[in-house]
Image (tube, rainbow, N blue to C red; front, top):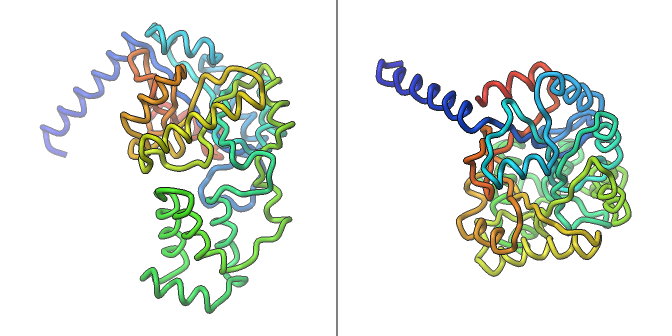
Length: 322
């Protein structure tokens, strides 16, 4: 490392320290599924035991905020308490109610659950779960279909083929395009109903149970879980406003929060943030690395994805963000 690079990194570190002193700091934790999983290529699952151990450990060191406390600091731009944490969940899996809520209630903690509404009360899978299952068993794949996919995609092995479709599906511009990509690989094999069971989203009744818990606050997460950056303004408004309206209809409560699907900086734009503000949403969560402070943009704040790590590793990763 050159002297210039070293000095730059030192200045950046000092700036972060000053910002934390002046504005406080809060790390927003992002979970997806709380379930014992023997197959999790995208690392979206945390076991119930590990989830409880992570939160119990962190609770001794950090200050967990309720969603109301979080908003008071974010909206009013009041410095966050040092080393604050907030818990969030994305998507709306049934295991959130079954496995996460009892632990949150026991530990007297609260989380926002951002719900994508299309799969509620159905046996539909999110596309990434379906893709994972299609590629899980190479020996069960149709060899002729597999050979044809290698040729048409110019990929050389299963991993390359999987990554190719993972990227295309994530950046699909609409449902038709996404379904067309999925249909290409759906011919690989048939997924059994038993395989689907652990991936299902909540039923309407389960969502109502979730919303009734003091440990849960409900936010919206679009209708179809599309990358909003890919959509025009009207389509974005439909995805955002439509999911908010659906949740209000189902739950008969205000829906004040939103989480961007995927949430990387390339998955939303200024128009997305403007739509959220015009809908009078109190905040919108993104999903890029880092922590936030009272000066962070409340319509695009950082979150930290939690993996199925030991509590000590989770703490180290949080410290590394600072």
